[in-house]
Amino acid sequence: MVFKRGDAASSGGYFGKFFQGFLSNKRAQITIFIIIAILLVAAVLLYFFLRPSTVGVEIPSYAEPIYTSFLSCVEDAALTGVSILESQAGYIYLPEFEPGSQYMPFSSQLNFLGNPTPYWFYVSGNNILKEQVPTKRLMEVQLGRFVEGKIANCNYENYYGQGFEISWAEPTSKVTIGEDRVEIELNTDLNIVLENESVVVRNHKVVVNSRLGYLYDSSVKIFDEQQETLFLEKYAMDILWNYAPVDGIEITCSPLIWDANEVFDELQEAIEANIQALTNNRQTATDDYFFVELPVRDEVRFLNSKTWPNSFEVTPSEGSFLVSSPVGIQQGLGVLGFCYVPYHYVYDMKFPVMVQVQSGDEIFQFPTAVIIQGNNAREPLEGEAFAGAVSELCKYKNTEINVNVMDREGNPVQADVSFECFGDSCFIGKTSEQGSLVDDFPQCVNGFVSARADGFKESRYLLSTVFSGSVDIIMEKLHKKEIQLKLDGVNYGDEAIIYFTSDDSTKTVVYPEQRIVELAEGQYEIQVYIFHDTEINIGEMITEQCVEVCLEFLE
Image (tube, rainbow, N blue to C red; front, side, top):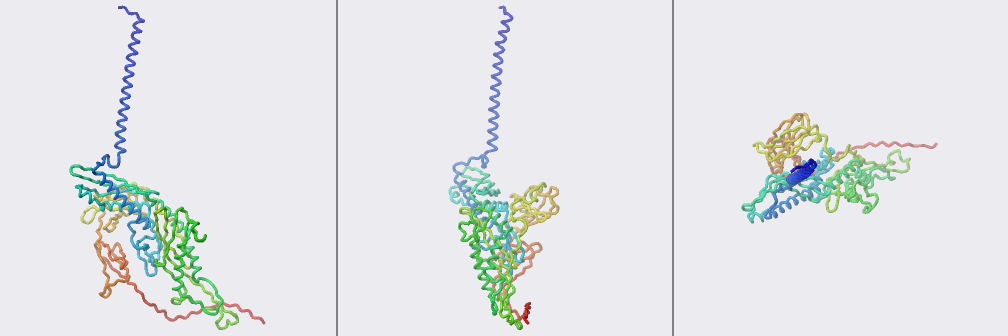
């Protein structure tokens, strides 16, 4: 057969197109396979990265009731902790108690309906103004610590009777307090075993509805407003001038005499009634005078009771009486033709006010002290009281430090670790079950690493964090000791203040309210101060009073 050149070209073109189409289809199929493979890999990666907190383990039906009970237990603990934070001014674990004194009755806590509530601002027993506003971070740490401690109290008795074995590892937590919710992320291996079947759930998350964060922020705004403007002191000044003799003149030839105790009683009753009448709701205010404009929207209440610790002093006085003598009856002054009695008294007043902020059914409260000195309001403290912001020290953590915490027997201790530098403090973290913590510290020369744990005395270690390194901290266990105070061999039940002083610490006990003291091993100097009612006899005094009088005689 003879082919023409044109036929050969035509035949070649047909087979060329066939092979080109075949190759094109092959490429399309390969592309599809590649896309499918990529999607499968992506799906696997998404599964591992976005798998639930139970680490991909689906909880079998036999374990679901137990796990539901566990989450319910965590939720109940969280709600209880939130309630304590709201009622105790943002604290679950109270700061160290600081007692008052005979002349300064304030301690660092207000006993409100039997519940100790730390003051956000108060006067110490040695007459020093102090603040102790908790940060939101501190609230989160304390709530997490509270929830961790409650895990051991979860009740599984019904399940134990059904043959279940339930165990869990030492938990760690992360708490986030928002405006309208509190999130608790709990990390613990919850192991549920039934005969030959078992499941381990590691990561757990519980969210409770609470306006704790919102109420705390509102409370801080109110406290800052009070510290800046002293609006409570201004109301106290009005009460003083309206209910007590301060400055004035009366036309009379008889001396003016007031019983100081009666004046103080009337002041206390007036303070209680007037403070409780204050409100930030203009519609509910009994008078515009009692309306307080505050930078919050929710209802705010102010409480005071004359039974709470307070202090009232007045000068000059003669014993318990305020006496002002008349002018005009003295020899040589009869030409005046009338008598008058000038008086001027100077007061110091100190009393507490409980501030309550309410949103729905939740109430956050904190107490603060109101102080009048020399008939004038105290000076405002410089700066704002808000302590929620991160300090400059905590912003720059760039030195890795390994911290190991143990007791004297070498057993690991789970402790909260902080770092202090030139009066500033920064929370670092919590040690693991092995008592170790590796984290970045801020750089500082001659700073202090401190460790705190329940049942142990706080330990501080001098450390320079300019370079990476490690530190071993040994903590001493605290031992509870019961106090029984005797006077002349007889049990003493009245009030007393007891100081246990060692080389590096002092413990204060207010007896008989406190009968247990926790002390580490060591030598202590014990000082006891006993107070009881007594009489003070003031001897006879002679007072000379000079009065300048201008007389004009007519010839």
